Length: 360
Length: 278
Image (cartoon, rainbow over all chains, first blue to last red; front, top):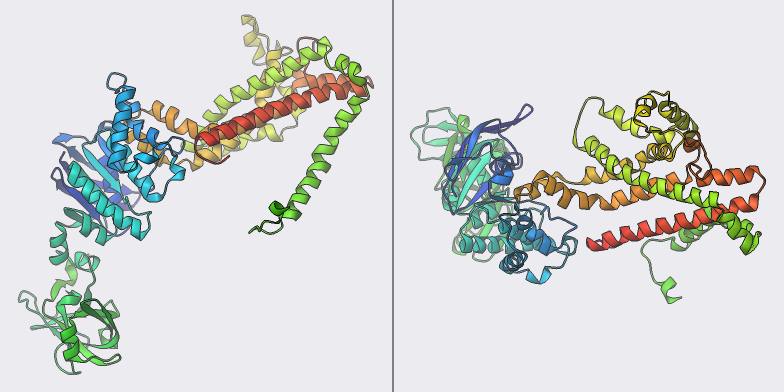
């Protein structure tokens, strides 16, 4: 089922949680709603599910306006961050719940229910836990049961609200992979909310990046990572070096230093924010010339890439981050012969500039 | 001894257990055992005679019957009250919340007098019931009303915190799985409240069995019809029949104790059924 979100706005008091959101999500994809906490992603998910109503705008599921439909009739499966398993029911009864509450005419027979629940428990690989109560399961198991329960009613869309948020790192990683595999098996349109960029980049087909109630960028994980559309997208995804300064001809003036840039459409004196990924940043020796002055703080070697952490000099500190990070290959590192505490300069082959007013 | 010597993380087990037992003995066990010791001086036959006189037996039936019924009625309406107090906001909510506790605070005699005044033949409420042949004051029905009055706060106050803790997520989950409001309540909300309702029921029942002040005015105290067991005990005391009074009291104690034990058992059973350790 495709999901269309049209002009959705929602305020809580004077706080604007969602500001005119428009989205068109094709069927069968696994989509991540990504953003920092308070960006409105959970509110949007709940509005799609029908657990919350929008102040204006409409939700269209499979081409049909569902804005006024109750959550009961929307045929969405919802998975909660804290599982919301019914504590007084066994795992089996939890999964069977959606089948048992169907109107008499549509309710499957007891035998069919048993078979279906068994199938779902096998799907989430927990059929051996059927007789346990939720209190006797681990967090990861509970979330898988919650997913099986949501799938029991054969929803058209699966909505997951920070599904792995309450789990520890290892289980999280496992479940992530498992969710991806499950999706590839079932091809059910799914939307999950997360604040964890790694999770979004790793699991989803498409990422909707949100900030302050607006959509910053929609794209595949590759696009989001490699071609951030806004300065927010740049600073939120991945590690990034950030410089703030003014345009001075072909250079960005950062304090007393200057960085070369390739853009021609910016007028002199405009304030800009410049970003560069650690692997697009290079270190040059010497204290004169192009580049921003910094001091080598730590050299971290792990695997094929060495990460060099640098502290910005006083002047460059108007740039928000005090630390820079540069990735170098062992060969380059050997050629440079860096020592901790050494004063160097950094510059970038691929500097991305955003005008100060483009920044929200 | 090996068991007692096992290492415990929390210190002071011996001290706190000792204190608990000593305190319980002093406050509860010794006075209660005095009841049995005193009644024992009657001898077996005397005890049976005192405790099974027709008037006394009628009072047992009334006391326990009315108390159980009142507690059951309170479970239903107390739940509704707690529900509206937790789930909705309305003007004067704080006031209503405070009103709930009033039956706790009010001297029971005051409650008895005002209930009698209301439900008497010429009272505010009684005068409208009279034409239908419904008599409340001076009948077992009046006793029931008094017991409902004093038992209400127990249910509301035990259910309220549990309801407040019950996350809206559970109801949302049920709704997203296609359950109607009623199905959600019956299958999800209500089962979570059962332990609290049982506790409230037990408390309301225990209070009702022992209630004297508020009942005595509205009951009319007609022998074999509207005499409650505590009244039988007082009557015997006023006749200086201390042994007889303690005999009736012991029967009451034992029955109450057994009933409370059954309720506790029920609670443990529901707890086990839901995977929580009892």
